[in-house]
Amino acid sequence: MKSTDVSAPSLSDVRYRLTILIVCHVAACWVSLIFVGEYYRRLLPLAESSLPRALTAAAVAAPFAVFSVLFVRQRFSFGYALGFYLFTLILSYLWLIEFSTFHYDHRTAAISAFVSGAAFLIPALLLDRPAFPWRLKLTARQFDTLLWGILAISTVVLAIGATFNRQLVNPLDIYQYREQITLPRPLLYAIGIVCGALLPFAYASFYETKRYAYAAICLLVLGLFYPITLTKLALLAPGWLLFLTLLSIYFESRTATVLSLLLPVSAGLILVLAHKLRLLAEYPFLIYFGTVNFRMIGMPASALDFYNDFFSTHELTRFCQIGVIKMLISCPYTDQLSIYMQDSYRLGFFNASLFATEGIASVGTLLAPVAALVCGLVISLANRASAELPERFVLVSGGLQLHIFLNVPFTIALVTNGAAVLFLLWYIAPRAVLQNAGPTSSQGHDDDDNF
Image 1 (cartoon, rainbow, N blue to C red):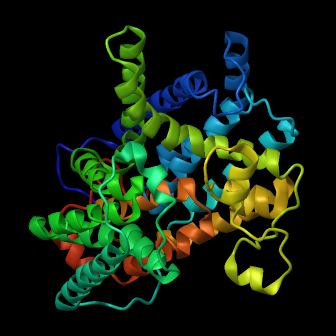
Image 2 (spheres, rainbow, N blue to C red):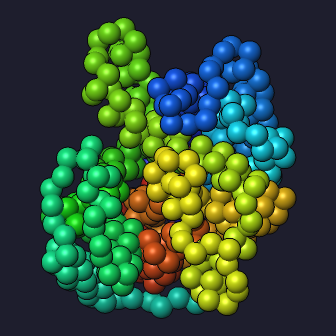
């Protein structure tokens, strides 16, 4: 749907703005990673930074930055948003690998990461149309019933979870207490689907149909899962969805996607400057920098470094980390990979993205691009499932999945964290109800805007 707003920016203006923002984002991420290395070298296997090493790192990562042209010219879709986040991950790893002190084959790993990133981005960004030819058409009344059902289910899951655990803990101490939480596996699945898919979908739906009180209730229920799970995702989810909503109000969806990473990372750099100038103490500075610049960007990228090192000397999983496959084939690993990472590197029980788990761990560096290509094709199906939905609705309802896919395996994101459920909800969502309720956020580009 084309905008008739004469004040809307032209296509060339939007492309120019996107180009400038993406260049700033690439530069901000690289500078941020220098400071990640400075402040977290005791945790990460990184050599000290120097100008020659930084220039070499930039030269290694720069060729992959060429793929940013896709984000300038391609129309918005869920694959666009997720692709930009995973583009940032691969770009950051290609920078960090120059500083890595691990002894695996860095050249092969860098080439594999480059090709894997390209293999994911091409189908995820370019295969976004057409919509599926058949779709269950919900009426406005049926759609309302679906949303009330989501709220009811979420409330029930919240109540059940509260019977197992409910404690308000300082976010700085959550890792100490979270290991003591024991929840039944079905409840863990339910919480993951509710927080990752159902409540964000309901929030975006209520907001798009201008029922702001119910949208606020969705955010409240989402935040109440924090005392149960003690996860940063539950703690920060309401604020993150509001942040995406504000960005999508004032900017078209592609610009909002870029700003959703550029602004938080840049804020961390401003705090670095304030700390260097002794205007800010280390304690409050590292709370923000550690949460955003390190945990959100640095750690997912560094996870590729750890996985490349671990699986250079250990047997591949052959996808046996997936429960169904583990029942069918012999598996060299009895526990979750996060446990082996903790035992080997003492860095916590961390998971990693599809490039590390479905790629490096499952099939090795040589075949990792094939796994990335398959994941990109799956995301292209999500693009088709969400085709013709308002762009703001897709960005906001899928906003938590962007961070989930950065930090957990692809299959876990689909099943445990509800991405597959969200794709199904997009598929059945009534286009007419959502499109007539508000703007489509398509200002500044037209339906023929393809690379």
